Image (cartoon, rainbow, N blue to C red; front, side):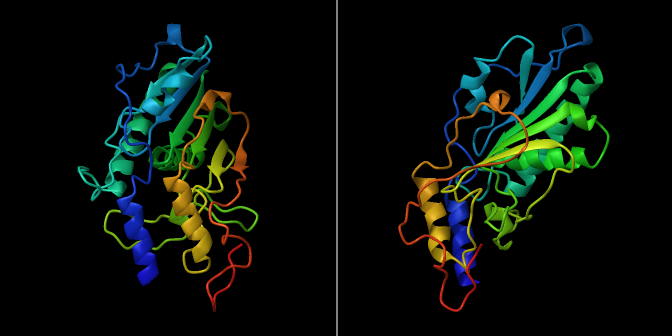
Length: 263
């Protein structure tokens, strides 16, 4: 448990769930009227400190005619990270409420349009949790909604491999609930993850300390960065970008003594 607390403290110390210096942005577009409905609306949620979803700017500049975007503004906060005023739980809940209203308002105005919810890091918690909720209801027809998640802390492990960091650490700090994996029913959702990114590909700290540490090193050395372009992504399922480990000691068959190897 001491190792788990140390790992979770490290999670707080990092700007773990996203970018830290987003550029200034113009005001977010409002959902269009019926006469101006796009074929596709992208709903974009940024990571930690990226309150205005600036990480999508380069991709937005290349969008074709008929595709528009709505940036989801929220606190993007992880208190007690220095300067943050909201806990992770409260900030994610705020983002979900804002995203849910934007999605429902847009769908009422543009019922024939396709909606794509995109999230990066902490924003993947927001967009992913909203997609999970939408998959369980009929607020939007399921064939008109899809998702793209980059570096998702709740990414489920597949084929026996590790999932996101929220799937294997216990809840220790108030306001930072490790909620485990979640699914999306019959929705088309693409999970994009680098294998050196300890946010979305996190070995169990007790069962495989070396590879857990590899994810931390990968985070610090840039492997939590992605080429963000949700409109260019097609299909659902997992896109796992395999990378050579940053730590040579990380690999199969290297668990802590007396524990079972992680898959």
